[in-house]
Image (cartoon, rainbow, N blue to C red):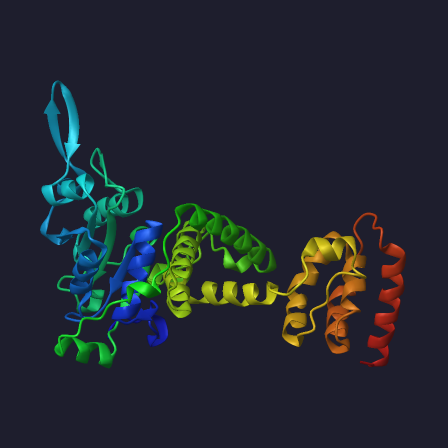
Length: 376
């Protein structure tokens, strides 16, 4: 499969047909579009149609390379002295009733058409019409290397979708030839509660903000070199928002955990997803920064060594606000971890007054003495 970036690695997370169906459930519930890239003939368009039947929605397949931008953005129409923009009939039907609007061969179309698709997929707008509330857009495409006249993976368009690679498993291919359709058992899909979903999204946004305080590299305001040159995804603010919405929708639907994380990676890239996941895992069972700042001698100390190592990310942030609180808390960790932090803290001067100054100074002297003696 030619879905490769630099160093021959896969550009986007890979799912099978079952994973694609779960991703479509999350897309339908979150209204966040997904674009599936894969080799010719692996079933991308067929799975989209199958999903539409399962969801009880109409299906329309749009091949943008067959059309001009005005077909989607809308023809100027004068009625009663007013000009409106009317899209082509297949798109208009998606504005009038719930539809799975599949957009096929996306890398084959000109940049001007890709710009129109950006508005259609993110803003859910076609000309002067809005897509129906129950309509979802889904992208499908061969990789550029496997497309006839492939153009480019435009960065702005990739920033409107989650990118996944479809690669059916051998068992899924055999099931097709045995005429045994692959489907998610209805009993495995949790009911959708729109209010609970929005509440969970708010929690996940707060969790992400806390993780980004641990590691600012999670937020990539400027596109990475891999995103600019190789078509990879990256952690822009909008990509994070879309990715977290898909991730929450997938988790609440009951999708396999790896599918949920792949949806997030399909928005922000593998490295950002892995960093967020690692910090999230570390934060579970770790003290909150405010607890350490207010009572460093009493704040919870995780018993797990791995989570104590996670404190090596947290405490430098604490030290920026109160270095004495950081000293007191670091001394309560396992000796080798505490002394490793002492090496980092010894060059940090105190800033302003601290209620922990006296106790913190005593701990600082003791820890530096241990460092000087080479003791653990």
